[in-house]
Length: 163
Image (tube, rainbow, N blue to C red; front, side, top):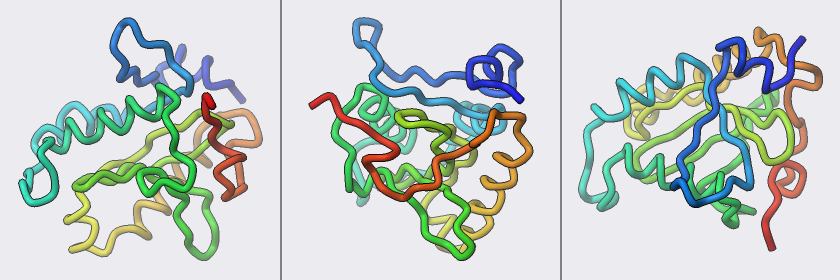
């Protein structure tokens, strides 16, 4: 088993740093190698619907990631929520107008991004369940120290604020 730092050193995960150079992180954000490939290759190619937002899908994701890492207020915010499913797989999502990112919380103030897709694609294909199952599977296969995730659905157990 390994820690988050060891998984980054071994190339299983990498840290995502969306902040400006002068900004200090409050929370940690990681991505699996598959997610990072999606972030680099597929996310920029997602179609943009100007009815949703002024920002492109890529800009939307990096804006929400920057707010998360900087320690902005997220409690009970719809941009970050636990997905309910039976059985409970302890999967959370980042939401923007056009994009969904699935992952889990291995420890308070840390998030591992596992999968991403456009909101419209997910709705058309009814693929929430598939992404939840794939995220849980990836977590279970990862050689991460136990417990691999926080099983609470309470925001105060998974996220803190600077205030």
